Length: 37
Image (cartoon, rainbow, N blue to C red; front, top):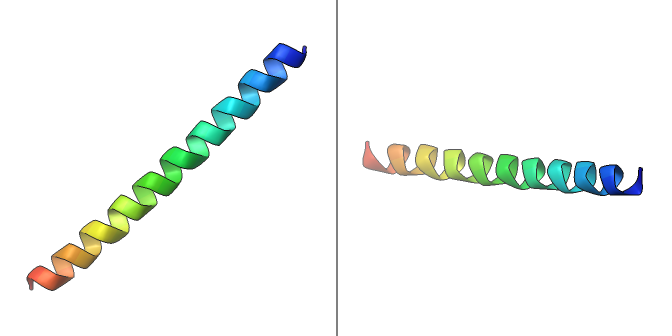
């Protein structure tokens, strides 16, 4: 049971990091597209 909890914790942490990364990438792309105009 502990092992499963640990895996779930790691997965949620990883998905959080991925979300943050994509948010950052999207913001950066928006900024760059605004600069290009």
